[in-house]
Length: 246
Image (tube, rainbow, N blue to C red):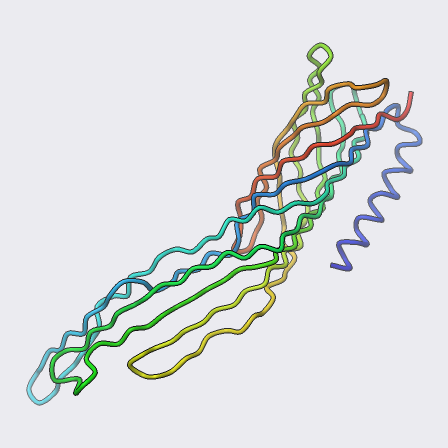
C-alpha cells in the first residue's frame, strides 16, 4: 500500500512538470463504481459414497469423487477515480489513472457434503455430514494505471478510448468454517486478510460533454483485469474534467 501511495505522488509530480510544456492537459476527478470479482473457491457440496473391493484377504475402500460448487463472489465497491491526460496530438494523449474503491459488505456460501460409508466399515454411524462455509468481506482495491488515450470529437461531445496497464493492490478479508457430525470435529480458517500487489490492465472508453468553458462532465467504463486469482472486473466512472493549457 505504501508503494502505491508513493507511485501516485511521483506520477502526479512528473505529469505536472510535463503539463507545463504541453499545450493541453485534461484533469479528471470523480466517482467510481467497481463490480469486483473476488477469489474463486471450489467448495465441496453434494454426496459421496464409499465402495469396497476385496482381493484375497485384503479389502480396499474408496469414496467416489467429491462434487464441488464454484464460489466466485462478485461485490459492488464504491470510491473515487482520478486521471491526468497530457495531449500529445489532437487525437492522442498519455493518461495516468489511479483509483480506490471500497465496501463493507460480505458475500458467503454454505454447503453440505454427505458421506455414506460402505457396509461393514461402520458400526452405528454410517453417514457423515460435513458442512463448509466460506465468506469474503470488506474488499479494498487500489489501482495505478497509465497508457495511451485516443480522442474522437463528435460535435459537442468528445468520445475517448484507451488502453492502460499498471498495478493493483488487492485487499480482501476471508474466513472459512468446517464441521463434521461423524467425527465430532470443527475447524477451518479464522478471519484473515488476503492482500497482494498484481499487474493489471484496463481497456474502455467514455464521453465528455461540455458544461462550461474548459469544463466537461465525463461518463466512462473500463474492463479491468489482473494477475492473481481474481481477474475480471468492470469499473464505471463519472465526474468533472478540467481542461488546462492553451
